[in-house]
Amino acid sequence: MKSLCYNKSYPQQRGTNKLYGDRMGKKKANVKTNAARILDGLGIVYELREYPVDLNDLSAVHVAAAVGMPVKMVFKTLVVRGDKTGILMACIPGDGELDLKALAAVSGNKRAELVHLKEVLGLTGYVRGGCSPLGAKKEYPVYLDASARQWERIAISAGRRGEQILLAPAELIQAVHAVAAPIIR
Image (cartoon, rainbow, N blue to C red; front, side, top):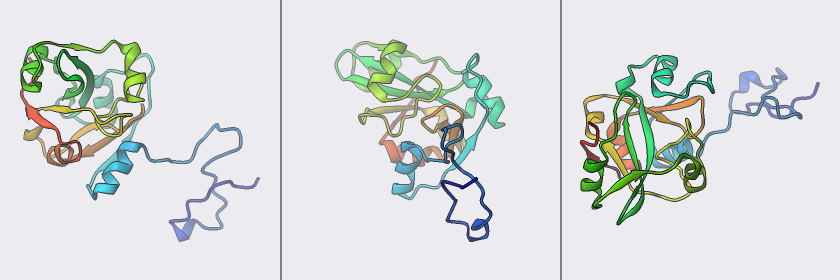
């Protein structure tokens, strides 16, 4: 069988006929997400950590266990609509509950509400379980819960289910121009 794509960056693998993609699309080449490409472009150091996806359990608790991190260090990204500023993103610890009043206050809104799940894909280009504050269709304001600063590294979605990006909270703040504030209950 003839390979379609070799990993040419590793000379020791040349000629090994190792297949990274196939004609039927069953196994695709390891392609970086927009989020990873953005971090590369900014020169930010990060780690990609893959895990098996369970479509019956897309919770942050499950993801944290799968990547071997405490759930408080795995941040989920929620899409929110403010009554004055429109769409924004909130990154909160996996076991946290978003305080909509606190988020509204820090974002210059009177009220804020979670965007319905049906709207998330159209607004961000991301599906539930793969929503990242990096690389959305449009650059939305990002609010990161202040608890992130207590950790050396946190995990955020890489922009697809089954992959997390681990990076320093300060690097995430720099990358998305996030505002760090207490936004959980």
